[in-house]
Length: 395
Image 1 (cartoon, helix red, strand yellow):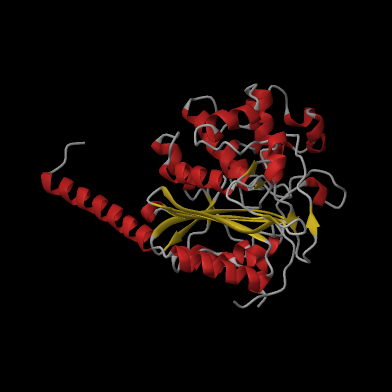
Image 2: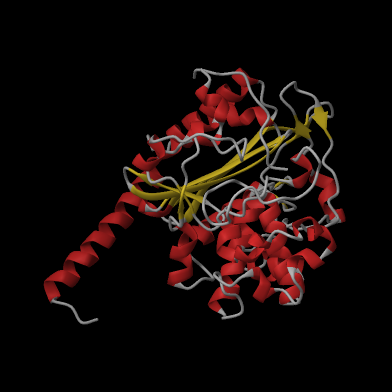
């Protein structure tokens, strides 16, 4: 699930020789700056600050990774994976990936685009062997031909018109709330249709494709789209807003919307590879983080709530393909969160210097710390924290 639980507010071609030389100088300067930032990162101070913040908000477990110049420079874990048993959280502890799964899945889809097997702008009607409403899970859409406007690009940019999940509807039925492609409204349902396209249209096993194309590519040995028995030996249980513990469940079904189990060490490898663009053409790497659809809503959740925030345009807030993009003072930037009642994950990446901060927590209260930790690692940015976490606007 990737909804939001309300939290109380907290303050807290040939070219001229000269031109070529200039380009080389710029690239070398950028690399040097990146190396300087990496070497200047005060690991001891960062670790101490993270532990201090965790104590302040009673966060039981948090793990992070820092990426500079497209390379992992720090991976760390703090606190516990199970408090009652005194089990520590480690960099190899298996945690929920939650909706970070969506970004990894989008990365895999773009490999299929590069191979000419998937057209981002083809209608679902052309990508499936049968009309969408003829599939049992989509019978609710019979009589509403707007489903034909659904394309992989529309679904990846959360512009399907669906609620986040159908079970959030008063009658638990799937419906289209607005013309697909016209606006952003976060929806896991859209990723279920993308998965259906791969399974029914391309006859692919999504779990196997993710394993071969993403997890194996980046050496993610402790990551899977479905439960593995060996995960049980080092598994993180979750903690809610009230501190109550929720055992980590065994997710047997593959879900493009959020079934990935993973570790911070593996996520560090993943996001370093993604920010470098490994496995994708330059065009697809650019498309992943390009601003495809402006986002006007004041907050990401509730997904269908009305309202417009004019401040979004100032930072170019927009939907990428499985991520959200914005214009930082340093240049293009993007992020992706993952959340349920016992999990808080966040990745923020700046294109300048290929810098990323990856944070996983088995305690949802850790989200309260993320803006502060991000400032410590990335410096002051234009990251729209109050859009991602609506409770930040109620201070």
